[in-house]
Picture 1 (tube, rainbow, N blue to C red):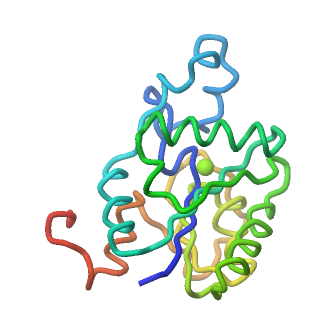
Picture 2 (cartoon, rainbow, N blue to C red):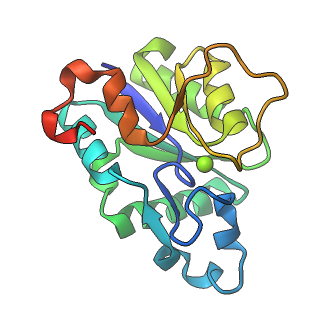
Length: 186
Ligand SMILES: [Mg+2]
């Protein structure tokens, strides 16, 4: 059982209602028809609430890291709004933004949090839908990662060995299935 799980936001735990994972999710923040009330156009991905509740109940620290071009203060206040909108803020130990223009930006945030929590990379794992910003960033510092399979995220030219792919965040429960409650099984 990991002690801490890093989760991406857009495309991972929530996404645009109308396009889910068939388009990069960020259009919702730019399109004139959605940008001023984007919360109403977002929804949680399947089984997110149950999965977060279960992991939280097991004492796993859940940490949200979302890349955003805005200054950290603005980005993190937006993250809190989203967590509160979905009523899932209590499941999270903390939430952070990372630079929107640096694919390895999450690695710095992950490293800082692991140090603060006195944990090793292998005590944690990362789940996200971006190959470069989530999966590779985490693996670059030794954090096991799971990539949410999709066709819109930029992908590497060379397929990495043992690429860990899942369909939904809830699939990580099967990776730790000795603790999975029957009601959460597929
Ligand atoms: Mg994402």
